[in-house]
Image (cartoon, rainbow, N blue to C red; front, side, top):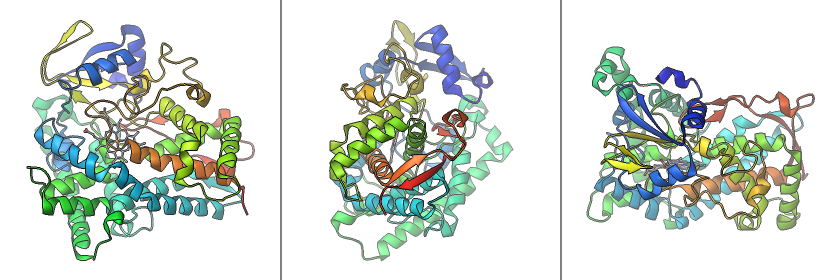
Length: 465
Ligand code: HEM
């Protein structure tokens, strides 16, 4: 029963898996669904049968908001998806391109540090400032401008539109589980709300496109994602055209979190924000880990105030912290849904075509068969381990794996690493006087992405004058 999954479906599914095993069949409304909850079963889905399971179910709200699912995350498997995925991997999110956004990350990290320093001494709502950072890094890399409070686009009501959009995508949609009753959306007014919100975004994108076409644009090394896509639309790429509508659908991908928002439960918030917020929450509860990371930073960065991206490869403990945060708090706990294109046999079960698949990463990353003391925050577990989150090790899959894995692992990780390194290098962190780790409410707001419900409020003491 859909309602029995409660407000934390990843945990309900985890409990069910403990009872019924790592591969379960469920009927969600009219939709036959398979849930997998072990590294071995995840490998079956995302490696052995990756091709047959590379489709995405067509979500009602995504059809209306994502230009008929012509974005990448909701696009059905086929020639068009392969075309845009290739463009994204080779042109938009290539290592070279992500490197070229390095100055944006540097400037936004400096702005974050400045905002924190301005609030010292005193208590700081760190979650709010991390949210600004995460939004602006992504939006400046994509559109050339920040979208956070007070930013250029915010003045045009962008934040409000984003909220509306996320609500529509994230809300429970009857039609997605009872496809034969899709007509209900016209009766409830959902369809007209979707059309209205879509129109507002479409107008904003037209404006962004016009601005990019009018302005004398930057040189190759400083192009933002919109510039790259406009060039491809103009000059072509391979033998399939990219239309203006396709370009706009791909813009949506670059807005924090659109790619993993919605389809099932409540809306999500940005993955970079979620990771940084959980990282700082775990760290303020584990002062020894902060000290160890600071000692590592001191030995590599020394007295210099600023951490450089070139310092990052020499910071194994910092990287271990990030892996541990991804393990305990995968930002998209059940990844994105897949759908079988043909009948498939997994673990001896014959599963028909058109079955929906959920991979419960949250459950897999707490499986005692894969992890010692799985509930504990222990970054050290990664120091002598080769396990990584790039999609080869199925016990750690915060970015998914296989054909439909996240194409922005480098981008997402780069925005997290530099910010976390600088936060730890610039400040000592503590909970406000009288607040103890046990007082922190760790409850998660479940959506397709999952953030801590409470804001993280801390005291920061600058390490440099
Ligand atoms: C910490 C940061 C991030 C995390 C943890 C994350 C996680 C994920 C996950 C779990 C999926 C689904 C994988 C699957 O179904 O197997 C996904 C897909 C996707 N992500 Fe991310 N993501 C992050 C950042 C980003 C960013 C910054 C972008 C874009 C600029 C992005 C673009 C996409 C796209 C386009 C897809 C869909 C791929 C497809 O269906 O072919 N991600 N991501």
